[in-house]
Image 1 (spheres, rainbow, N blue to C red):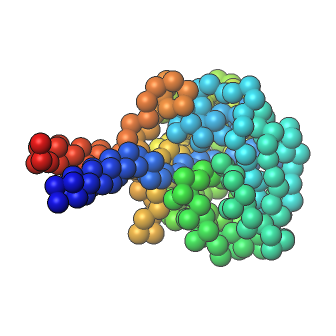
Image 2 (cartoon, helix red, strand yellow; image 1 turned 30 degrees about the horizontal axis):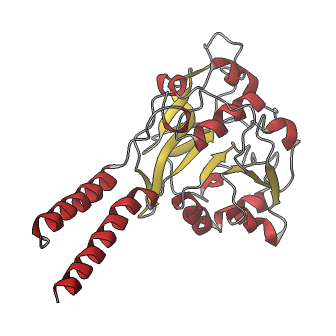
Image 3 (spheres, rainbow, N blue to C red; image 1 turned 45 degrees about the vertical axis):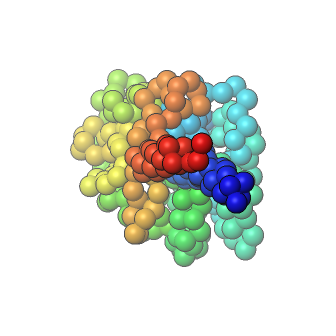
Length: 290
């Protein structure tokens, strides 16, 4: 009988150990960047190098790999020259919104999904297709997927309805300033943007902005439009979609951090579960027969 009890105790111990070890691996969090630039129309490859790197590295876009391995899916009705537009990220696939197989983008192992800019590479019909599939984007994001969203030209705030509300998106006042010359008087990175690796030179390359964001929630402004103080580029590094909205789950990484050197901080729920598991192991060890 004692051997049976010991066997049951050993089994319980290993179950508890597996639970503790598996807690961190079961936590999923996606990241998302939305920009008012149509980076695909302007071939802003250095801007994309930063953005894609920041997405796959939980907010750290300061160290861009020479040979990235992350697979990128580009979604649109027509495709720009992705080989030059996505910078160093040359493992990519184009998903045509005019084809029913475009939803393969969610199942073919893409680390990042890039949404083409409205009017340039996503038509009004394509935008409606995106918005009709919010559930697919939610499931992808919550399963640790990352999303980069370009701007729209003339499709309105509804262009972004394939994800929950991010605040308000309005056309930029291009009569005040339409390009950034490099002095930061029109568009510039915020402190958070600089910390994530976004540089003024990237903004100059992306150039014209067609959209600005205000009343943002859960997101951080990485770039601002100086005439209004509104955001041009916003991001959430580490979050989930719960109850119809975005919820941050992992604190942003201050470089160096994450895969580029330094620990990724577990979310509070993970730490709570981990602590509970360890406490349970301690109780088991104290009570087990000697």
